[in-house]
Image (cartoon, rainbow, N blue to C red):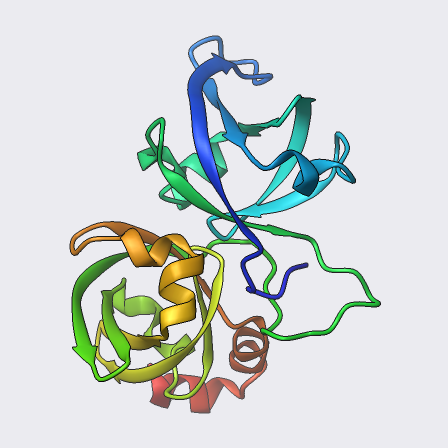
Length: 211
């Protein structure tokens, strides 16, 4: 589990296809290598989980200051990690410890869908970013509610149909890859798990009215 508070930016060093463990000989997974600061990975080991652009990945190998992750078909299909290129910056967060402060919100690292950045609007000292997303997930997006974009815990400002906006403060722009994103680029979206559970257990009649 994560909090959506990005700790460091990593750099994609290599992306390669590898033979999947599936019985289908044509199925290939992706091996992703990320370069991180050596002092950041000193306490990490094989099998540990990291949030990479909001996707919970398992470390399969550590080599000097490089971490390796295997992306299976489900991860490739559901996230925009498949769009990564060598040299791209990615948001990184270690899984939270019970003793830590909880500064963001509950983030599982299970990406629900991919959104597309529509535009950035500078407003005073902040920047409003508008995201277009699949309309079927609209029920999980509420104004002033929590949402995760590429692993960053953010608060929804506006919601209109298949679009929502978030406000990015200077710190977020300078410490995450959202500061170097451009319009029409993709972001991984994870909706608030609490909202999803509440919606799941609403009475069926009420659900029909909402839909």
